[in-house]
Picture 1 (cartoon, rainbow, N blue to C red):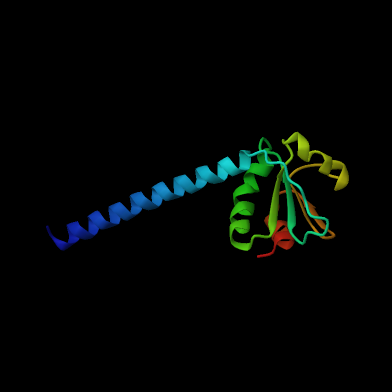
Picture 2 (cartoon, rainbow, N blue to C red; picture 1 turned 90 degrees about the horizontal axis):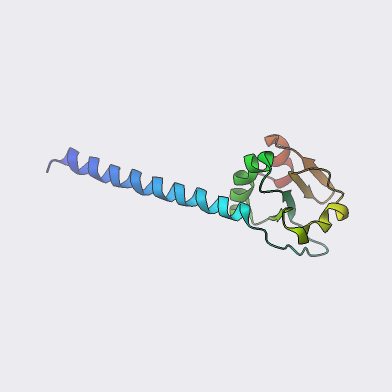
Length: 122
């Protein structure tokens, strides 16, 4: 077997592995997005609160970005408002729409990347 064929096979295997891992990662994030976990917040949390609904197109558009940022920084709490026991946060945080990001006194409702980065950091 020539060197070119060996390299081609190795590259093909790497591409297939990366594709499978990419698909699995994407599927896992979609699974996390659909979870309806009941969230209990600490009184003085320094984390960013991300309020979303798993059936909201705008929320879905930014969920992967928020999720992967949180994998690295661990500074975001994901709160699915489709969980009935999380709905008391609507009144507590005066939520009017999703997606909403809250960090201290900062608040943003929407999908604009520059505003999301301002709230969650880089």
